[in-house]
Image (cartoon, rainbow, N blue to C red; front, top):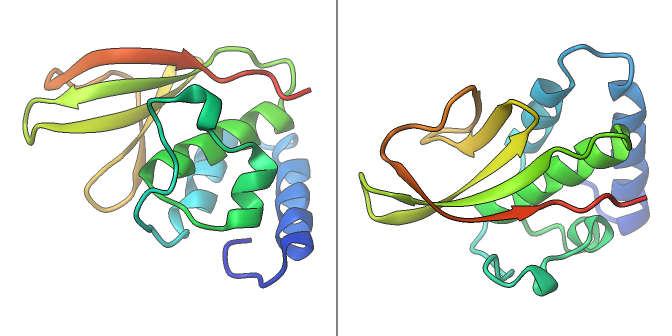
Amino acid sequence: MFYLEGFEDRLLDWNNFRKCLIYKDNSLQLITDYYNIADLHSSIYKPWSKESWPSPWELINDNHYCVFSILLGIGYTYLLAFPNQSNLYLHFYKNSKNSTTDFILQVNENYVLNGEQNLMIIKEIPEYQHLLKTEPLINLN
């Protein structure tokens, strides 16, 4: 999806990808792998202001992904593929190792975070992360 030229082409690719997820047991890993190939750019979104978060369709139209918007994309993809899922949260953490703010997506009992090389799924939040804020991802239906 990320390297297709037009909005409609990216939207169709994303729709087809979501449809194949309902038959997979490892859907969160597949979604994470899907977003791992996106080129990272500087942020054009305001993570601290939920009202300014882009919709899934705005993300696809903009096709400009940062650490924050990739996690939004993963959450949106999961919500639209599994509409009865309501346990998705975006957590804001202070990383005491490097004094940065990290964004971590919670999907049920799993967490998706950006590692040094790529996105990772983990079962527990590392001790060096200190929670600052939590926002639920809304159901998009």
